[in-house]
Length: 286
Image (cartoon, rainbow, N blue to C red; front, side, top):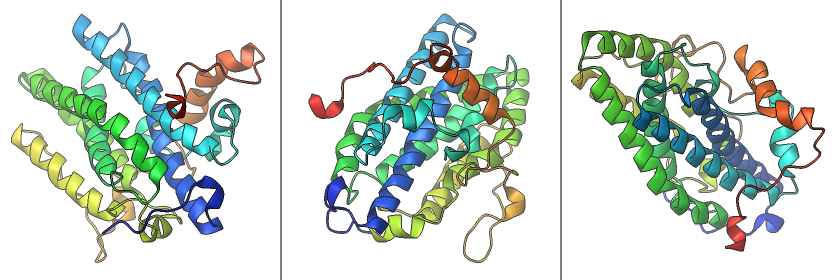
């Protein structure tokens, strides 16, 4: 799928163009924001000092990436409190993979989740490099390098964990639990046809999902983990029975999300804030 001619700036987009851009940005931003906060659950709890520092750095990176995407949503008149701190949790569009609480004390859960997510993120970012929306193209380059480190970190730990019998069993359990939720990263919404038609990304979700499945099942099989590819229909769409009950992209989340969102926004609410302090410079001001 080749990118179309570059779209105009945010103030010159038509209704269909704006809806497609916003839909894509919300998914990008919400995924990064929510999984980053989940990663913070592991700070000072990871198995080694090095891994503790690494997961903290990865969480910080993902929050920075979320900020880059939310910043583009501000182009359309949304404020930061409206986008995050005062938002109805039912309007978040992240994959439910991102919101699940980690199995208590199970580092394999964190690593398998990170591996699934980072392999998907690798494909998603590659499909945005030549996006027809210049503001997206400008941000991708700031993210790719850091995401490659995340991907390498996850795969290295994955191979390390399966070197022992207990670690292999824990990885298998995490794969069995998380694989269906990882598939929700590629679930379509009503705006995806426009996203593809407008060239906002250069590959469809179904094409990326197919490559993702091939990559992760290949790696897992190589290291002795069973990962069954999901069944699809004649159009290549994953059958409903292969997906979890809640996918997130449609606003339908697991029972854990409301509690998680309350935890994220607790300090903001307790302090009676009506705005959020800027922790990073606006990239457009650099």
